[in-house]
Image (cartoon, rainbow, N blue to C red; front, side, top):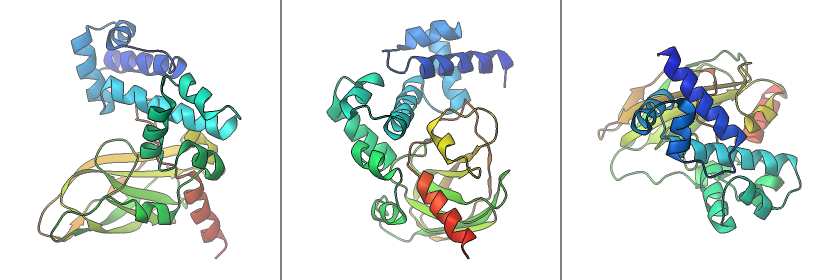
Length: 255
C-alpha cells in the first residue's frame, strides 16, 4: 500500500477521532488528506474497506460506548456530543449496532450468548452450511469470537457465530447462503477496556475480516482465520463483546 495514501487516511481518521461531534463533510476530510474529493473517497474505501461517512459513524458510536461506560453523562448529552441532533436516532442506531440500548449498555456492558442466539439474522430458505477451520492469533490462550456479518464492521446481528476458548479449531453451524464477512476478535488479558478506545498498536485488540461466499448447496466450507493486531485503519468494533469474552475466559480458568 502506498505510504503517502496510508498516511493521508490516517490523518483523516485521527481528525474523526478528535472531532467526532462535528459535522465533518467529505470536503473537510479530503482537505485533511490533501486529495481531491473523488480521489479521497476511493482511496479511503480501498484502505479501510468502508466509505468515509460509514467509518465516521462507527467512530461516533465507539465514542458513545466509551462515554456510557466511563462517565455519568446523560444519554441525551452523549448523543449530542458524538454528533447526533436526535437522541431517538442515536438510540436506535446504537441499539442496532451494539446489540443493547444505550441504557442497557451502561448497565450490562455486554451482550450475552442468549442475546446473540436470539438476534441471529434469519436463515434463508434451503439448506445451510457448516463453516469450520483453524483460528491463529498473536494472543495465545485467549478467547476468540467468530461471527458472520453482512458488512465489514463487527456490529449488529450475526448470521452465525462461534466462541472458542483459545485459538484453534472452530465450527459454526447454520450459515445461510449469501455474501458475508467472517469477522473474528480477541482481546489481551486484563485489557478488556481497550475495546472502548482506538487501537494504539500494542496488540491488545486483534481482529480478522475476510469476505466469504456461502453457496446454496449446504454441506461444509473451510475458512481458516488469522488474527492480527488492530490498527487505526481498521473499522471500530461496535458489538458489545467485552464481558462475554471475559466470562468465557473466567469459565475456562475455573475448569
